[in-house]
Amino acid sequence: MSLIKKSQDISPPVLEENRRTPRDRAGLLSQLENDAPDIRRWAALDLVEFPDTAEVLCAQLAQETQTPVREALLTTLIKIGNPIVVNRLIPLLRSEDAALRNLVIEALQQLPEAVAPHMKEMLRDPDADYRIFSINVLDNLKHPQAPAWLQEVVEKDDNINVCAAAVEVLAEVGSAEVIPALSTLPERFDNDPFMEFCVQTAIRRIQGNGNRI
Amino acid sequence: MNSPAAPTISEEEFQKFRDFFYRKTGIYFEENKRYFVDKRLIERIKATDNETFRNYFVMLRFETSGKELQQLINLMTVNETYFFREEYQFTCLVKSVLADILPRKRCGEPIRIWSIPSSSGEEPYSLAIYLLEYWPQVNAYDIELIASDIDTEILKKARQGRYDQRSISHLPAHLLHKHFTTTANGAYQISDDLRNSIDFTQVNITDLNQMRIYRNFDVVFCRNLLIYFDDTSRRIAAEALFNALRPGGFICLGHSESMSRITPLFKIRKFPEAIIYQKPLR
Ligand SMILES: C[S@@+](CC[C@H](N)C(=O)[O-])C[C@H]1O[C@@H](n2cnc3c(N)ncnc32)[C@H](O)[C@@H]1O
Figure 1 (cartoon, rainbow over the protein chains, first blue to last red):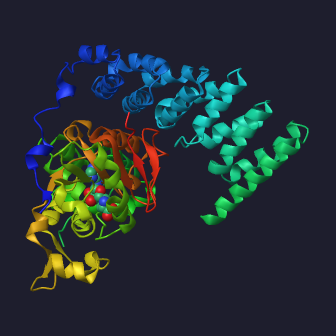
Figure 2 (figure 1 turned 45 degrees about the vertical axis):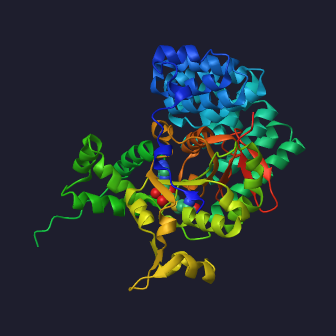
Figure 3 (figure 1 turned 90 degrees about the vertical axis):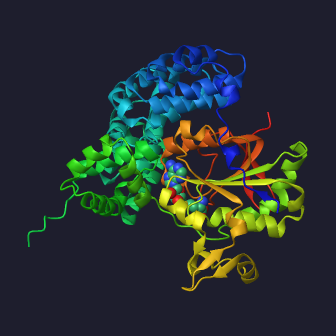
């Protein structure tokens, strides 16, 4: 028979390449700067044991170019998920690197409690693009305040693209309460046909969602 | 008449428990699982002679053996599975995937296949049967089949290899006759040869340290597990599977699960029989 059972093989003593170098805090931090992506990736994963390295991990995320290492850094940062991580990640939303921005959005979406205290300020930033990225965070943020934050954007923000982004997310997460705010939105933009269309679609979606429950 | 009132679980307690259980297993219970969770929690509160959730929860968090946590895990996991579930992926393995892997094998190097989570064993035994029956080169290679799950009770069942009618209903009759015997009470007992061809081990896929020793797999079947996880646990599991695979190794997920939505770590490979994921060669 060709199927063989090899219990001893599943538990090799300990992993060679992984243990060749010390797995303590200092050892891992120096491996985070190693030239070999695989070593950097393993250091990023193992540093989850040292939440106080969050700042270094965020700095590394901003300059790392290899996808697997970036992904590992992100996984560890989400797992650490403390306010320091969020404080360091939020400014990266201003990066010119779209791929990095998307990673940051993904991470923030998974840290609703730590992100919540920053949200109002993020949505009032003078930079419209930055406000749109903040709305992207809300797109998948499991936080009870999300619809209220978006409603405020719809009521107050004077940039049409920012409002359109908020409307799109409200279509997913909004309930009947936001419909009045949505209905008056096109007026604020001279009944712009694109905005009319977005709002109508969103209202239909929200009403449809209600029917389903 | 003196029997104490059944313990109850408040909303706040449910949330406390949910967060604790999530940190331990990666499994996230949405609000709509409340009834399922409460029922099992109350069962354990009573079984451990605690009167309230509060007392039970203190015990659960501070016990050093981890025994009660394991009991809870065994109760809270959904173990639904059956032989030849999503058979097209097994067909893909014998018709396409193995042929893709073989050119990278050094002489004498075994082919390593992992079923995680294996639940009661139907999936890894299906793999063994499929390889023996439908892969013509099966005798030319050493094949290691490893099967793992977080649930220690279900692993006992898996090692035992005894199944009811529901489990085997998708299995062709001739294979049932060939690899099983019928027991006195109408159950189907899988052959000792098959039982002895699989290593069953306990592991929590979201525990980086436990997962560290699982390496160098050519193919991983990770089906119908990620659906119980939230985005963060899925991401942690994806990293762990990446670590477990050889470069060029493959992952099969359940039909409603998607790796692309979790991470760009893997490439999509389209074979005639199925679309699966591959760890890049370089
Ligand atoms: C629905 S079964 C899937 C079985 C089989 N793969 C299939 O598709 O038929 C899900 C299994 O996942 C296991 N499981 C849940 N959380 C786990 C974890 N963190 N690590 C490993 N296994 C886990 C459960 O114990 C359960 O047996």
